[in-house]
Image 1 (cartoon, one colour):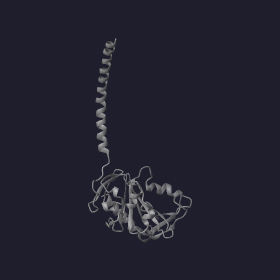
Image 2 (cartoon, rainbow, N blue to C red):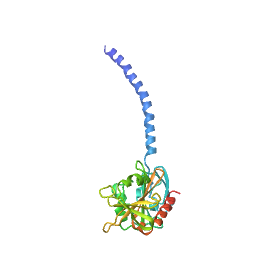
Image 3 (cartoon, one colour):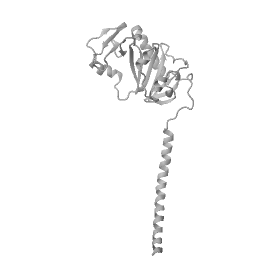
Image 4 (tube, helix red, strand yellow):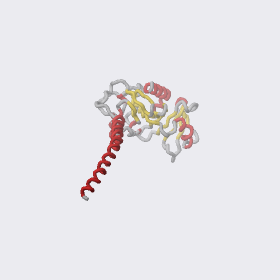
Length: 251
């Protein structure tokens, strides 16, 4: 009886071994393919920091190619070629040259927030003591309306009924109190708003007013932040400088 039980049990063990073999042959290729995909897609970073005086880096944001001087990139983690979700830049005005290396980490405030590329610099912090710099942020437009659409369909819902005259053909249209843009003005070329416009905060005590001007290139949204008094002095030079910067970043 014992011999019969032992004899009848052996085929079952062999059958189980035969079933494990095709299962292993199926799993191993999948595991190898997964390791290969993980290796290819795993983010890689330069083993050494990129020098600030090297030629412009080719970077892509939202599928759009830009050529960016490393010294203009504010966050150390963003100083690498290839795709970016967002990139933050600074340029001297009106030369549009990158800030000169001075031993200080201009991107420290950006890096210290959460250590990734999505940290947003404070416009007030940018304006304080930086009247000679233009700050540029490039990211994906995503689900946001293009700036021209906001100018036509969003901003008119929140502005005052009448604009006042500004310098050299500009018009200044305040946003109403209690709206999302309270405390700001829409400044635009009176006879052709599509040619130039900006959304600007008002000077409040010792805090100077700052402006935001946006442009769209493909699926990339380019935001330029600068002191409001630039427009009051010579808005045409400001608009021309922005044109030159766009040609410099996207030849």
